[in-house]
Figure 1 (cartoon, rainbow, N blue to C red):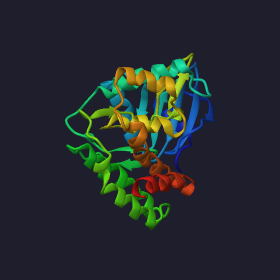
Figure 2: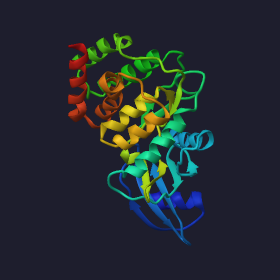
Figure 3: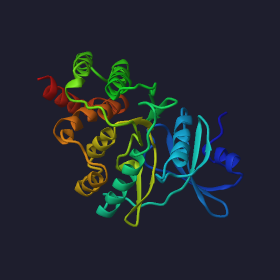
Length: 282
């Protein structure tokens, strides 16, 4: 029999688990908060398919100044990280300013191509990172068409919508611009993945790493109202946002996270995809 969560945590940490309760989130697996004998807490995520998340957290810690929870243990079935205490509710203005500064700093880190040296994941779904020299090619093939294909094969994206996504993908050069260089992206920076304490960002969690266009990250920050004017004003001061993002490109880049949500949760997110396709395909 597969051991329960407490024995798994005890085996890895060498400490007795004296309390265990569920935490919110975890589309890639169950998430639990474990209290350890003698004090201390760890967050345990149970898989399968968790190895990429551990790698991504360690990579962020090694390559960037973005705060992430230290990884205690990582394999395909169990990810243990140190517990980061945080509050709840909307992100205050001071934390939005702090997040803008940290993400602008992250986006200043570059690589020779769009993609990454290995594939990663978003919400437990595979994220192909085969390198490409052009951003348009990478976004079209590795993000938009790849995720639409996953959603189609799961039965959650209608074939007629897939046809329309393919039509839009063939015309992306009308709207998509090449950035000066690839930028390291967290990849899933919405409110549920940003831990805030005392008006500051304490940690970013659940990354979906790759090198891409910062505008994808900025667009994602508008999907659930994560970031507002304080964030975007501060980000624009550090790294100016090019004209056309708010008018056109934001909606196009939002197709990727919307497709992720269609694949994970079903058709309730389909209306947003259809509205964008209606706008750009006429």
